[in-house]
Image (cartoon, rainbow, N blue to C red; front, side, top):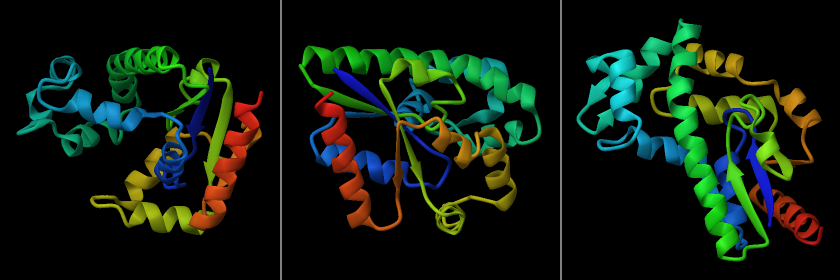
Length: 196
């Protein structure tokens, strides 16, 4: 089985591209969706995060991401602490997904991991697929999100490799501007990687 690693900077269209892979019959695992589960009441990350960051990050449904975000905004060390707790849990779930796909005899599977390159997970995939878009598209998408501020957008961008650097390290680049063109690029990646 070949594994694609779908990545890209914030607001580039990774989720849309992942859905297109799924619609084409490629099973997709999303790191962000896994984190959501880990943060919910009863999730494996709730208690370790409460111990690390305090009771005030808890909300009615588990971890309150807004309150957690406040603790990370100006503290690089806090971000490292968060990653030390969450990343191993996410990696474990990722490996379980891959094992399941192998058991189900899939020829191709995909992992959508926003920080694939930053966290050194490119070694866990056969091909790196970077989703990109022009800067004005990225900004419009991100600033349209609920609760997003320009300060937080800049902070997230600072944590990620630049789009240019990601593209340099990619096996495939998908430009997500129009749905039709994006879907054609997804089909092209599937055709090239399934036949290898």
